[in-house]
Image (cartoon, rainbow, N blue to C red; front, side, top):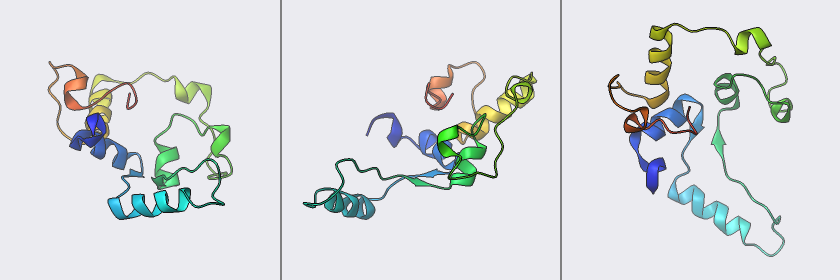
Length: 115
């Protein structure tokens, strides 16, 4: 439903190591969440942590337990300059398809969450 249903968003999520939850897995999670002794908060998230963390600029401290061997990016790495071809390649990889350089990135499915 909404922007998340688009192919470009799905491709961007997959490139970052995040998968979509299918109907069967979603219903199983819902059944587990509504059980009498279920935790008050439940999250369902299909992710390849190595790919997900690699897609970030830095490994957030919250995820150190998930991927402790991945060092946080240094300040010089996180803010290094990028060439226009590198930026275009990153955008294409993020949205999962070719982009029109004269159109808004939102038209290609790149919203503030993917930026």
